[in-house]
Length: 324
Image (cartoon, rainbow, N blue to C red; front, side):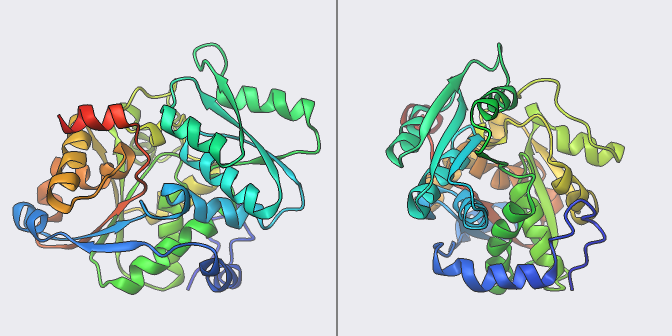
């Protein structure tokens, strides 16, 4: 059963709390879609199951975290930073809960994600990250709105708990030898680890990280938290983070079996594989997990592997170019 030994900075993340979230959150979220992948399995010599969150509310796993977080706080105005998916989830959760939100987004964000935040009722604050970082802009806004709540996309125990519901679903759908989860700030992967530990499963969890933004892999190798010097220039826009969150690092440094760095070329190849083999539209960050197997096929040979597709929100032009 879960202990808090690996989460000193999140004493609230207890087994009792997780049980409560697992009992209440499913009434609001959509369950993941599980797909077998016989052609991919045959080509890559492992048994691949896809756990897709492309049909989750707002098109990604982020809604699990956003709704669990916002339903736990009294504040009515939310300020957050996001490249898109968390912003959409916060905007939609805010609309369901009668709250308002401002989402700080890089000016390079996919237009489809900017439009979606606005369509869900959120206010978008675009920034040039070469001139001011997203976090710095959030701090400026919080000075102007001292009563607002800052929603962290991954470094919050309520976010981890919300994401752990996906881990619960995956482990119930198993058995799997390995679960592969995308790694950006670590909110999803730490949620999977926490669910695995809470259920006492022996399934290994492997992180999939873009090679151009490999701070988590470097941190795991060095045994200490190492940030990227600047926002990574990777096709996997959902993983353009400077660093893992502190709570997430405490969980992942003990809970991950491995982190595999995926070149952008393999991520795009995986995106095409999902479309051609499974008729599934996947955003680049969601393709990282299959990209991990394409990058290191020998690592997974003969194993029962669950690849998490974290979302399907991709700019049409980017997607068309990737498929071409």
